Length: 218
Image (tube, rainbow, N blue to C red; front, side, top):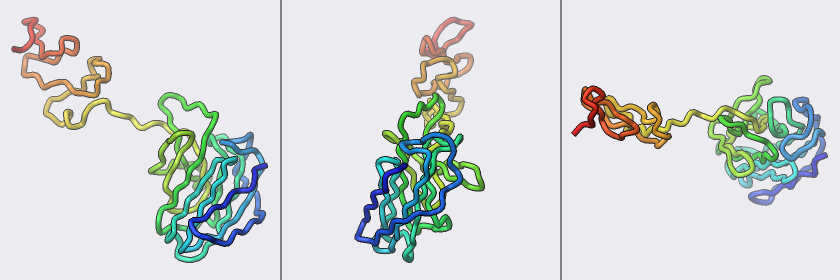
């Protein structure tokens, strides 16, 4: 069972604790730092104060800045166990139609998760039963962080890392430039110089080379 959420506020705000309906998203063992049981806490956000949910045990933090809501909003957070598609517990913030006028910041701590090569951690939102990684989600030390413009159900997931070019785009913009890695230059992140015919760039010799004359360009 999760410990009670520690509710800290940007300014003093009423604190309401209560029980809500368990979420039906969770299944299986613990995710992040949480367990299989669900718990619900509520807090009232105000235009002048905003608010912050912070709980070390479940590994979630939501910072809502002042001015993010136009009127008082009673927000409930229900925590359930991770699903087959997530690597953390599922955090459902309601009412889910709440939209922030200023972005809030959601942080989910992730521990004891092996991230395979070519993958990275991200925060995803559950929409119509499917998880969709949020744009702006960044992996940091021990977890992931993302800006939020609305409430909903969120969890940490594994997604494919974006392909990172080893070539400098400014170099590739030159006519005829070829990425150095195409001929095994060890991922230096540079591009081959443009060689005049009949010379072509030789990665090992590091020169424009004429293979018929067996000589580098002068």
